[in-house]
Amino acid sequence: MAEFGEVSANLESAIEEVVSKDRLVGAKVNAKGELVELKFHTQKYRQMAPAELSAAVVDVIERARRQMAVKVTQAYAQFAPEGVDMDAIATGSFDPGSMLGKFDLPHLPGAPAPSPIDRQ
Image 1 (cartoon, rainbow, N blue to C red):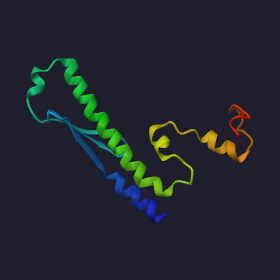
Image 2: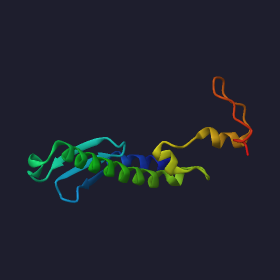
Image 3: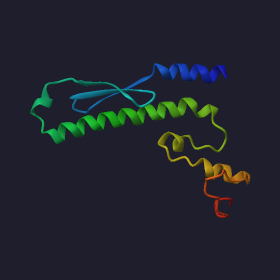
Image 4: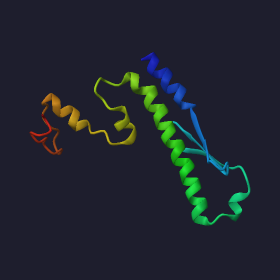
């Protein structure tokens, strides 16, 4: 558990920065994917169309978030049980029900019963 705590502590201060190809804008995000800084490196944004500027800002933020998600996934992968897809967890597409269905456990009240197909 000490190692897990150390990884978590390191991620608390982790920052991922991405700068646009034209060096116009940069974005920094923390390990939670929250935007912590948005910086314009030039004055070029003043002449840009609003849609173009918006696209540039969204692009750097999303790239920084994706890069940070990879960093977090790699940091915690060593603690994941065998067979757990850490990328699916990071992207929010992980289905714990499909994993638990393999154990033939009774379903939780209010949850849909697993189909026989899910258990194969």
